[in-house]
Picture (cartoon, rainbow, N blue to C red):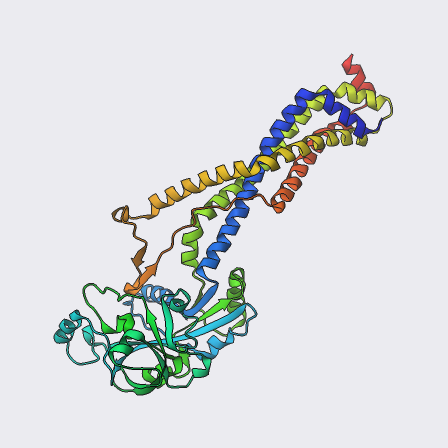
Length: 477
């Protein structure tokens, strides 16, 4: 009788112990499969979060590093942003992960021959302050905002549908070095301007001026920013003009020729963001002690923080259950071998080889593994969903309680004020896991299960190699 047939007969003969092993192994498989499935679901949710944020990376001046340096030197914090050399920004355009890009250069200006949209409170400000082009504190501030770009159709407001073209066309890279502009529909109607007309704009210090041909008119649903009761015309979204970044640089002065404020690179796949940043850091000539590549990591971490913690917990569960399962099964099999010493002694006395005895034990436990895998695959999705939802709910409640200031609770506030008074965007954390057992999860579970079964069988079975039939049978007497 070969060892496989003996193993099958042994499983049938020891129904009680077989059912006990199947029960224990099924519990182990369900826990391992739950951990694997939650990790897979967390990865999918993280990918979706990255896609919802957009796969883009921004090259910009590193204000935080400048402030840290100034504080370390004991001086007063003064924020002066060095513009980015155009050659440096263009250096990253050729990277294989970049599918598109846009360059930005912004400033404010003064409407020379047309009227910006004004609000009542502006009159109070102008009466308190004085000359045209000066804001509070004496710094130069215009009454319109000038957004210099390379392409307008990839600006976030147009992608989100907040702004849209109503007449004319978008600005493109063909407009670089041209004196053209896109204006908002409200300011166009108030000044009776149409596509093809020309308007004049001065720099905020009135040192420079340009004549711009209107090539496009857009409308926006944006609202003016509340500046603590003040209303500044340049911040009114109706007073925003889009220009080629070269035209904005001309108004900012000769020091800004061949520079931009920031560059945005759109990735061909959000998963390639880290590779793009690593390549830029290692291969480009950009001074990353002054500039940084921002991949929206702060918002990304806000979104995936809870599921990241759940995935980390489930990963630890897989490790612990795998080790504990191997130990428990090993002990059970060791006890089984002790009880079957006489059987083993008889087989050895009949001339059976020791490796066949060990193989018989392995086949017996593999039968148990196959049954446990089948039960786990059938019920694993339900268990993983219940456990995953419960863990995520607890994590969300824990993070909400620990991160939300007491004064914000119940107010539904999802925004804040960041450095320099700029509005900091906040996003809702991912509150749902798309748990679904995949073939990869089942495959990984099968590998782990077979490893547990083989290790937990071979180690206790090594004692068989030291046994002699005569000694076993004599002790049995």
